[in-house]
Image 1 (cartoon, rainbow, N blue to C red):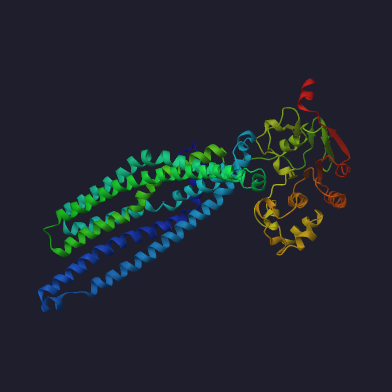
Image 2 (tube, rainbow, N blue to C red):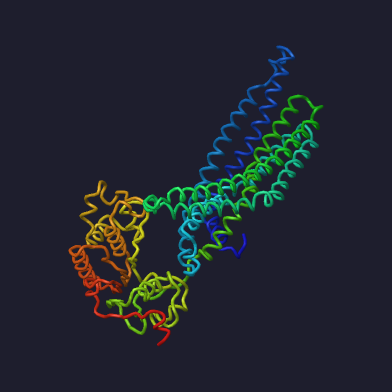
Length: 536
């Protein structure tokens, strides 16, 4: 695997960790492929031999030994079944465990990428790369036993065919080699470009659905629904065309492979035509079984281009998914526009609309490139550190309360996957949302729809606030935490937050246009618009 590809490096590490399961899968695949070849070959010999014995008369029937081959057939059938089950069990377990580690690592790599690159990736493209592209990577794990299984099938077939004629065995191996060469040589030109196009088209379709779906009501109101549907269907049609082109390339490749395989079987049949019928049947059926046993290796060669395309897109999207070493110290002082904040301090950021208040918070959490000289953490300039270096210091509740399609509990556990029910309820209580959640049909396990569609704007904001409370961080960043709340609810939220800060000693940086949250801060920073800062 290329050392220049971070995704390949990560995958190689996962394969090393799963080598126990992969070894068992390989042993099982070899047993299944070899026994399947022997099963079909011996079956042909047994049936042909039994037929000839029957034609030869009662004495030949009595002399024919059917017990030993029938016992062998049963043994091969059992071994084939157990081997295939073991291959799928251990191979897919290794693949699923590798993917379970890969997706979070890729997401972390995407989050740690420079903000300009990470945020330029649309939601549809990010989804396509973290779902379809990662699924394509699964083949690199599942197909690991394929070379060994193909070798076992080819070796068993060649050994059985050689009983009829060594020359037939050579013809079989030559035909199998022709198949593999065709797959290796023709798969890239026939399938690589269509695979790239299909993955890109899937991302564009997800983008269209993500853009138009949430705005369905507005589109209907303005009479634009039909135009939106047409736009989505156009992307769907483009995806279908790309998929058909890839399938056409794969079909052409499979046709060439089939012709090569048919030539190999026909060659074996021609070479063994003068041997006794049982041996001829054994050789021809063994050749068929050997080619079938090597089919997984052919499929791996065909899917190679799709795998390469997926890995290339993942590398381009996330850069390096390996974790970065080092992090900002938890007890460090913050310096923001010359204002020094010791741990536990409370700062209100004020200024005109569009002046960059939210931008400051985004710089702190690494979602925006830090401007030179504006932020230092523990005496270190933030712009000199990798993206996300200081992210562990902050629990952030953004102005736009982003929620996932899931339950209340699932949205909360984004901040702390290990949080128990008591911690969830404590956070909901502090956000003044517990009573509302208790009235839901399944409480915190109630599905709240796409992006929290079943909740009001204020409820979504408080749910995001509760999620920030669950994150164990020395600083709490709040952007318009009470926007959209009535006065009574706002006072209750602020009072609970004041009690929380007094209890935990957590620092606070708050942005708000409302007076109630600003009273929590003991200090105030006026942010000037960019043009004003440049003038000074």
